[in-house]
Length: 364
Ligand SMILES: *Cc1c(COP(=O)(O)O)cnc(C)c1O
Image (tube, rainbow, N blue to C red; front, side, top):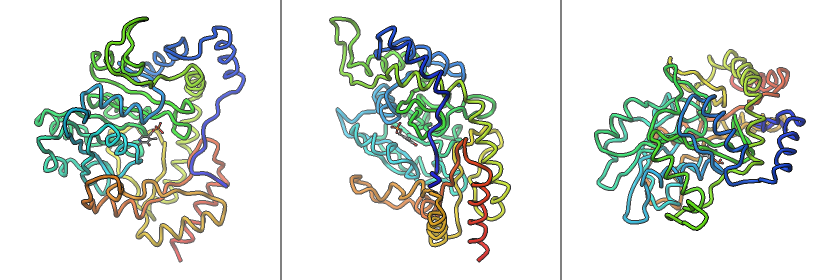
């Protein structure tokens, strides 16, 4: 089966050398040499400051909420977010006692539509949690204006936006915090892992304590914390993947452009701002209707290709959330979307087969 994505496996010999170092030092976790090295190298690569590595992308969100005092521990609070995303964006809020309130997306960018945000703001709203979905930039300028006016925080789930530039700068610089996932299936990965990029150093410092049980010295526990540390083994994988980022990106860009040339006249693609420097992480296409999307998915599967319905269902349908309002745009896009296989090792001939199957189905 051709999967929708494949974990990037870097040079094995290099990975082995990092593991040798871990054995020599006998240091496996707790802010070790490799975690420190990866932190510094990622700050340089992404052109950001105040980056904190954590165990996964979901904990990155949870720690970001807590560090910015977006937590329902003391009183009922809400955060406005998008229903068109991976479930972790909303479930992490709920897990932290924060009620996710969905605002509908823009039909072209598929990101949170800012004109739907303000009428959702109540006295309990503490934050906006937008998602740079598939690596596209949210309307960051309008969102920050709304947040400032209402004195609430912005935490971007930037899990898809590794390396994305907007107006010549890192997209990760927007928001009081932006979080990344380094799950094996993401563009840059550490097997499991994640990171938070904070706007302010004091928030980074608070989060550093939180990810290590609130411990600040051999005999001092300063505040409530949790274990969200990244290990040396994860960091070793990250350092190796980062070394090969250029090759990885170039191969993906090649696949992405071939799809675009073949399919952009036939199917709806995500609309991105002019000023976006994209990372080619995903290739989502929207069909005319749900039946067509499901039919193409089935025919691809018969031919050994696994396209996936990301992100279906729209999260407004989650049973464990109290809010059951409809977000018609998100529901509509979610019902008609398919993500096509895209990864560095995808062969031209395989991609041609995928394109041929889709175009044949569309011309029926
Ligand atoms: C992958 C992903 C997450 C969760 O990250 P994990 O590292 O798997 O915990 C959160 N949000 C979005 C949008 C994602 O794609």
